[in-house]
Amino acid sequence: MARLPYLDRSDLLAEHQDLLARNLNLYRVLAHSPRAPRSLNTLARYIRDGSRLDPRLRELAILQVGYLTRSAWEFSHHVRIGREIGLTDDE
Image (cartoon, rainbow, N blue to C red; front, side, top):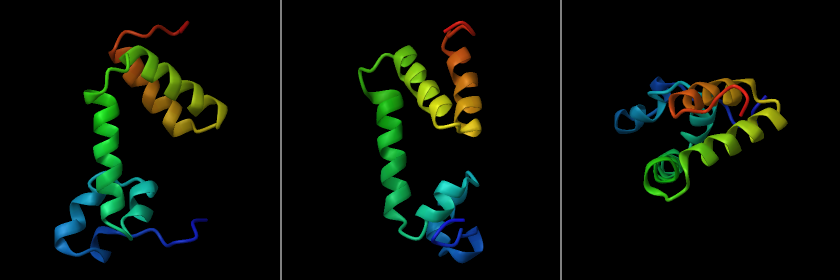
């Protein structure tokens, strides 16, 4: 269980309810400090779209971490993304 309660949209001011557009527990906890999920989204967008990191390498790294940490959600989510960018099942 999280040390902080998971917030719902109704717990947030109207100006911050967009933070929970994706109903993930990570965002529901980070919403206690609205700048945190906004900053995380900025970083994630940069890594995905703005950096020079090869998309194949990025997804392979994420898949490896998801597998090693036994994060079923992370792994399955990035299997789909990996396939979209051309990764094979063998990779």
